[in-house]
Amino acid sequence: MQHYRKQIRSQWVSKFKGSASIPWSEKSSRFTTRFETYAIDVLQATDVTKASKILRITRDEAWHIMDKAVNRGLARKTSNPEIIGIDKKSYGKHHNYVTIIYNLIKPGVEYVSFGRKKSSINAYYKTLDKENRKKIRSVSMDMWKPYIMSTKRYVKDADSKIVFDRFHISKHMNQALDDVMSQNVCQLNWSGSDMT
Image (cartoon, rainbow, N blue to C red; front, top):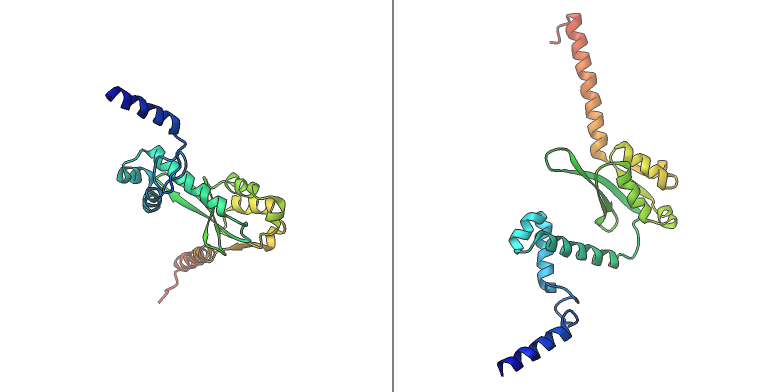
């Protein structure tokens, strides 16, 4: 009897392995949909290494869950944004950067690329066909030259569509004001004038 049960079980497993569909999981998925939803929440709150420890899964499994979520989001995407924002974020200790492209109409991340080079932005613009690039009405960014050059290369009439963000304009103006003030102070000190 024991031998008979093992034989039937092994036939059943070999027949249905990897092809059984159940409503609470995607086909060929190791995790339930509910667990993957929880895992995405944890991954958004922390990095992959910490999340994998919390979830008790491997880093590869965590990356796979994240990759599936991104692909599901891209599949739901119906159109490309007309107004985008480009920003860079640093991570780590040694000036490592990630370039992030945002949709400023329907808030969300459109594209992420490692580095802050011209190629980081070029890769995004290459994902859009010419018609979608023509639909871009405005690009908000800081004054980072590679971003400007890439946008001018791929976006028609980019000079009238590039908008520099307030923070960086204020930063440059304050720096220029500080430079002028320190030059004036130095000139007054050299001339021997009393500033009081």
